Length: 291
Image (tube, rainbow, N blue to C red; front, side, top):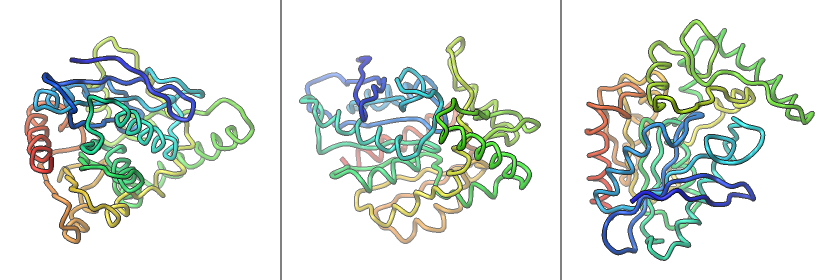
């Protein structure tokens, strides 16, 4: 059963879906949100339906400033505020009598795959974490881009940051585009992979406030692994040119609580068939093992 709900995060209302399995609770719950400027309609319901069929409730939400959630200005990607939205989503789950407050799994993909590691180090009593093709190292991600692109995005970011300081409307860049256009993601094939996740006819804002470009290179949530004691599943793509697998491959042997799974896939293939069924089956197996 899918319910449309809303919850508060620092005075801003976030839009969400709550998927409930059949039977009586309290149910273990997977809390889910998307990656870079994406919205919950971009295939997160497909994962939630599989988890619900396996007996887990799922809370799927949009960050403030994005999708159906409130907040101004629109399309402002603030890493710290997104962490706060995660914490508010967890608090919402813990207030529900039919959801098990001790069995909460955080699920993230791409940028949110990094978020769930960081948030799990901030929130008490998280049962497990699933990070799919996660952003782990800002430094590694920067090396996926040309110097000219990095300079251009930095200049756009500085301009937008100054507008923010002055209280002006944001200056935007594209979240994704073809290689001949400036965007945060413009590696060959990534635009099609990203935009194909948007349901046909669904409105989608392809912009992001440019100031985000000043911070992504400094964001390396892989450092949070050293603080985590709960089971963690990291799923990386050996052909991923957006969030490279190497940081996870190098670091994960140090942590006995981390399961690393590698797949011969790129960044966006895990969201759709045929890779989707393999990825989500491993996630369900992991949840059954740890819960």
